[in-house]
Amino acid sequence: MKLYYQIIVILFLALPAISQKTETSIAQFYPFKNELGINFTNVLGNVLSLNPENANSPYGLTYRRHMGKVSFRSAFNLNITNKEEDDFSSGSFLSRKLNIVSTDFRIGLERHIVLSKRVLFSYGIDILGRFGTEDSEIRDFNVNGKTFISNEKTLGGGIGPVLRLEYKISDRIFISSETSLYGFYSRTKEKLSINGTISEEPETKNSSVKLELPQSLFFNISF
Image (cartoon, rainbow, N blue to C red):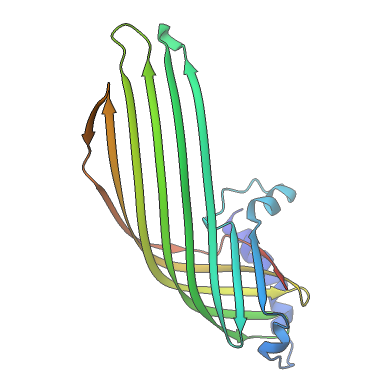
């Protein structure tokens, strides 16, 4: 979903509520202590026929524990990919296998400012983590064929501030979007085997500072 669709949805819901003059306490805004969220950006985009791009947030599930004006926040995502195919193109016979397992998680704290009885603004900080493995195998069954086996392991971490806007539909149902500025560092180590001969490839190191605009929408349920 394009960014301007997100902005239109948030503003459409938020502006009438912000204009309300009644004061609302954090206990009234969050009558329940726990909040579970699901990233539904692409689902919503498909329903509205907006042909959305993939959500920029890597987190599929979020969990918050409300403690007055401060909340513990966390998020998690798991990706598992298994592929196996045979290639007979160009007169060759290749067999390929690929297995990818990756997980992203974050934990942090956020502080709340109640803008109205329907709208809440939060700011906080997150600590990030990432772990992933990628195992691939290519077997060449042609004359003088070779077998290539690659094993990669990636470990990363980061930290950064986050801003979040949440709209209250009812005491148990909320929608939210957020923006973040994360600094991240990761290292990837690869081991390559060619016909049983193992070689250690040089480690790959990456660092980045990335601004994520509020293009992801989360559907949240309190309990």
